[in-house]
Image 1 (cartoon, rainbow, N blue to C red):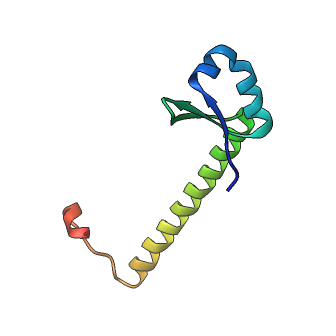
Image 2: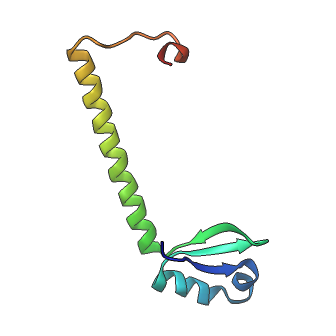
Image 3: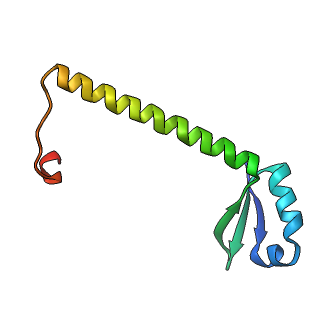
Length: 88
């Protein structure tokens, strides 16, 4: 595992621009508050890549769910549930 870039809340308050530049150039910056991870700052391009990956995974999961439904329907293994408890 690669160690993340780290900044404190105080560093952000006094010199936010250098932290933003670090996030753009070197990847995510974990901001620590009271010695605990609080937020992560990432560059816009990296955020766009993450959102795109998320959309692709969501689409793949949707397709898989549709295919599972179609297979269950084809093999007559669909179950009619009247509540969530029926599915568990």
